[in-house]
Length: 111
Image (cartoon, rainbow, N blue to C red; front, top):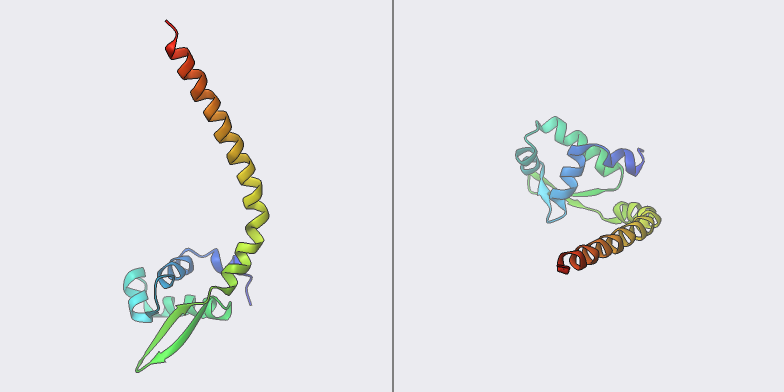
């Protein structure tokens, strides 16, 4: 089985996950939206299914796919320390920009 990051590295797979984030879809619908042939969509769905990112069910003669959020939650947990790192930097940048804005406002008020 591929790692979650290897699965998510492929843009079409990320597009499929985005489409499935709103509601389940058939292979045909995914094909139309992605503008990919059925074998390509099926390959991507197989990788996503084996990685646990999607689940399927049979509805008459269609196979419907839906998102399974568990692997994405694991990726989210892995990203947590990086969010904390970036949050500190973004907060520092915001404070710096506020200081610059106040300094520019003070300069602009002088005759």
